[in-house]
Length: 188
Image (cartoon, rainbow, N blue to C red; front, side, top):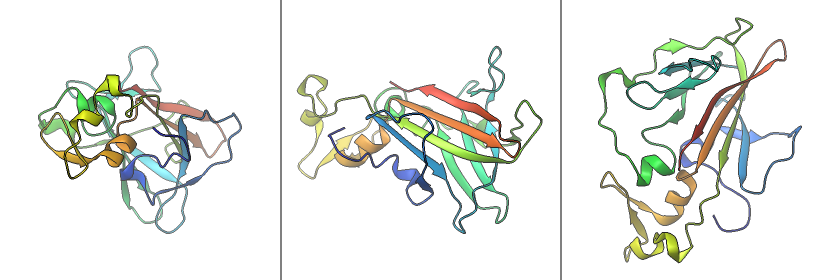
């Protein structure tokens, strides 16, 4: 992405606030805290996928990519955090996925402490140079400024840059103060 402030994924716009980072945020990293419509910052997570066989706190896909939805504990508002078939560089420009019947998020996440209510921090990483002619993306932009995606949809170039991140992470902090990484997906 071009220099300046990273705007982050469009599907999360209006659902996040800046987070005070204990660790330095990389220049190519968008990091924000999830916040519900009423300002609540506590959520339950439900997902479609499974736990990683070795790193059991991580959620991964099965026959299709993982889906993670946050549910506001006060209002029950649902916010789609990540769907590997829709979000990230690979979903936009690589593999396409037929919508399988098992894609609806159904299992609620519990961390190693047995907790199920969390503050949520989201990170998207942007290390793909879409403006580099070698990648060819600019050559594929039509006269209306739209880029053709693998699945046949067309998306404004600026939107494709925001949604075509190459890594996505979800970290949760339970009410006891323990932070656990739930999603860490390489997407390019």
